[in-house]
Length: 442
Image (cartoon, rainbow, N blue to C red; front, side, top):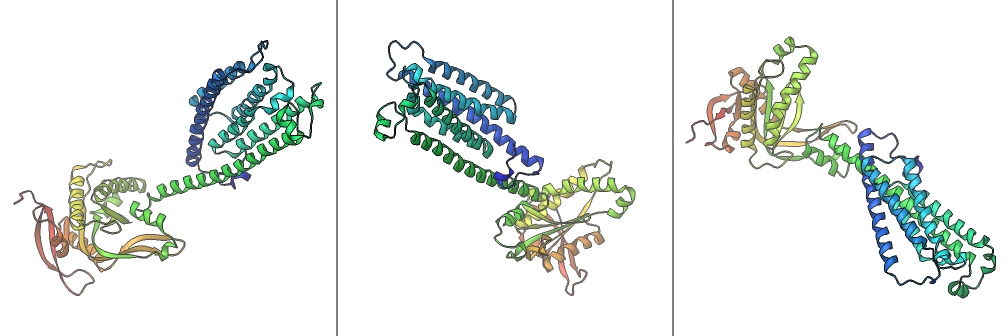
């Protein structure tokens, strides 16, 4: 059913995943509609059989139970079908016609049951059920069905009025006296037109409300899917900042705090690249990144950058982590252990070297207004990268700075002093330590 004009074109050419999500919502709504209709029928049945009868004693025909039974059977079949599969549009359209048709037939039969002229059924309060049936279609959040239901209801009532007037005694019942209209079987044509207008006005209002609600629902699903996809490209904590930003991301306030930076690099990557085809190399790198990302994230680290075969991760920025130094060292040691025990699909083992430093770091979005990335900057970030290079020169796996060692638990790790080192690009030497698990805790 084409409804683009009602929803502003939001659900035109939507990705299949988003269309499927909306479709599942509609299927659930259709089942809910069926249960509500059954409940309404049960209430109507209870009221009918428990209300004091006012029909003449010689009235042999009681059509109400037949209409109620037929409608109950139809609703049960449709509800059963709704649980089996997604109902096609033609079935939903037919359901609206049957719903209104049976309701109009029920109202029409009142003059037969109570042996009154046809104008009698025009006074039936059961007319109000038309509004219930129209509002039920709003549960699917498809404005087209609301509109169709209202048009069928208004058209059905016009037909009922016409049938009452063309009866052989119908024209004689027309009046302009409002009191007589209310106290007898007289027909006030203007009053019946008011009913039709009311049905149409309610239909239009509901249609517009559903159209707007559907548009908001679609936008919400799109935003949710976009946020989920965004988490594949940036850490969840960064994605949360993006979702909560009130202005341009490039103008979002940066954060500066003490953080621990882990710089991790793959050993012998050049040799590995020579041995593998490009496809095999990408597959191996992705497998390697999956292995080392899990310990980092579990220890509350955030991977800010993938640089070729290297990873830059920060602890305590952007996510708060009071034990950032300990967690950074734990993550590095766990990565070392995992790589030593895991044979990759290519049949070989990989090894990585790490540099960890703790100091003042600034984090934020950098780039242009059309292309941004989140990263951490500062001299202490550079020190972590230089420590990784120094680890390669000294043939050790993990080197950390004095500040990182100071914040770590001595009973958990074994630290070996590597003396002072003048890192590349720096004028002053710093104290460095090799980190290992303390297998003989004091």
